[in-house]
Image 1 (cartoon, rainbow, N blue to C red):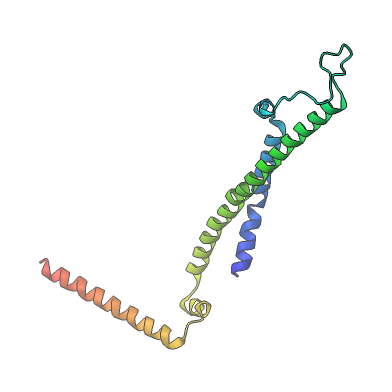
Image 2 (image 1 turned 120 degrees about the vertical axis):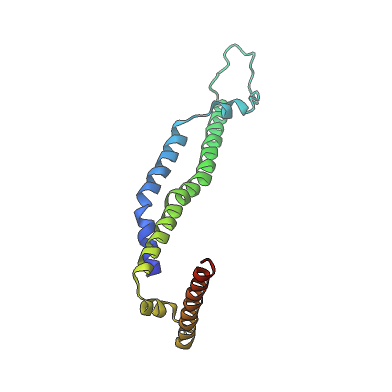
Length: 154
């Protein structure tokens, strides 16, 4: 019963979690942080002659450097998503499912009768009987206390 209810609760919140994760991925993929590219070192390229009249601005080394910068940026975005996606799943799916599951169990247990609850607890019958006897005794003590209080205040 518990496993089925947990799976149902997780399934109910799966779509919301998926939408949030997709929003995070879209947000990260469309937002280019200029600061990242500013922080990259602008080293002069090796084996190049910057003062040469026919300097090829897009030499092989320059293109490799651009490629490594883009790769570093993509890796940074992937690392950010690796940290953000589990948080989004826990927040949108797991915590919501936990709340829904607790409410579901409170409602389900509230509807059950004593015999069904006893079977669920798999409690020793003599212990159950002792607990019921003590509960009855407690009720008697409470009613006696109320009666004494009502007489004492008159």
